[in-house]
Image (cartoon, rainbow, N blue to C red; front, top):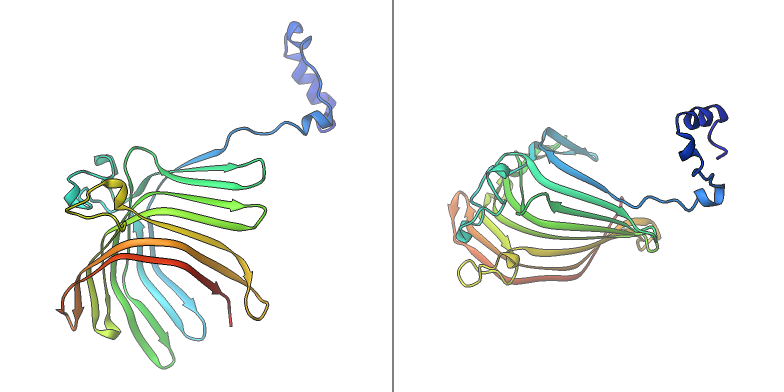
Length: 273
């Protein structure tokens, strides 16, 4: 009780009935050290993000214009299922909503973060941008434009291991529709769709199979020069991918389907040079 001023303690006790005072037992410092919190933190999220322009500068610059992150404002994602996967009309907005984030610190120091829907249904997410421009003294070019992706997230789990200093990220995602242009290549992609590798819009409409599962480890590791770098290990990623239209010079040259795409044992090191 060393941290509690005697005057403040007296005022607190003065307001307590005598019978209750008789039951009060003072705790010494060692006993106080054993008192810990038993509940984590829950955050309910509703947001929308707009950025007019994001600029990364090295010697030249890359700028991304008209960035939007929010909700899809749709009820017809994956329409072949015949249901509103967001759970109801309340989620049909341009807000990123229906998100519940639960944060817990375990007794061994590990941090656990679970990202879940607040109510039954998936979390819908729209990401869109305008032009991605490379600029410098020699001129400029547009490498990407008209990007729009409507995404569903079933949930996500982040675990930070206090012993190994590794952050593991696991999430379930599905892309209903993504479109973009690459003007410097005269290339465009339309109706890009990503699902789990066992989902089939005709033969297998099982909703849990709709989502592709991503498993990442993110941590610090030295590169070949012994310099600490950002390490990203893609432990597993399995999906089916459809591109409804591949455009060259504005004309469709056909469609693409990738069945049972599997990416495993993939390691990235990111560092400056």
